Image 1 (cartoon, rainbow, N blue to C red):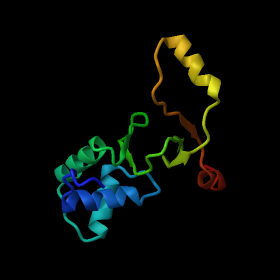
Image 2 (cartoon, one colour):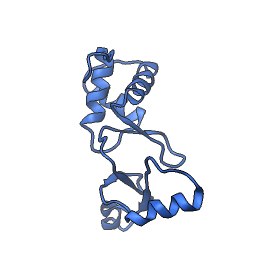
Image 3 (cartoon, rainbow, N blue to C red):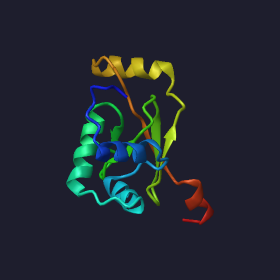
Image 4 (cartoon, one colour):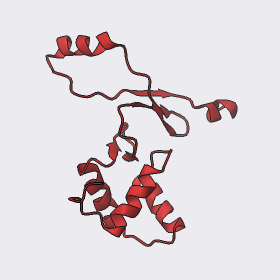
Length: 131
């Protein structure tokens, strides 16, 4: 991490939780993880830290539909898939076909700099449970 960053103990702790999470936690999930680690951070501290870490480019905020924002420590280009039953979010590293971005550019007039595709479906766990 850059020495120009102002990573307080609280920010470093929250960054560690997001970076090492595989489930794209919400702020509430992060609060739970902090409590499990014996920390008592205020909600404002968590939200302000998440904004700081997002603005600094250390994590990504995922706004997936109408649900609460989730946070992702995986910064490489990738997409996501959401279970419509339980809300689980997983990463998808397959990329859309190359001609697709060009078609979108021609159709909209935009110069695409980045994209994120969000798939929905039913996760293996919910399928196994017959949900």
